Image (cartoon, rainbow, N blue to C red; front, side):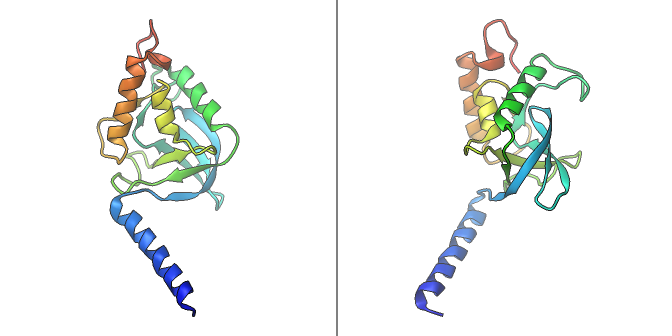
Length: 165
């Protein structure tokens, strides 16, 4: 094997190792969104055809009727999530600092939209969800900062006359 090919493989292994050691998240295969339960829980079809419920990591959106007790802004937040998700495949991203699944068996993942944006961050920035405070996850400080800005700027469900998500 030529030296350049060996070096390329070594470099590739080092990149993977560096990502693993840094707690960064790797993108899983693209998945198709089948259903939006509410703004922080979706059903996806994996590349192998299996269906999995996914709970957005670090996101706490208002509940909708039928899933749990409805909360103010739940339907609005769900509509915003649906709009952002669209019909194109999305990517699920893991976080080495967070659990793999929640107590209900749902995958805990970040969702990368087709345009590259982080769905959870976007929902929080737009004021349709809060940053989850209870558990550890890698983007917690970032998400809390975006929530604070959304509140201060009265975006989405934080708009004047609304209670917030």
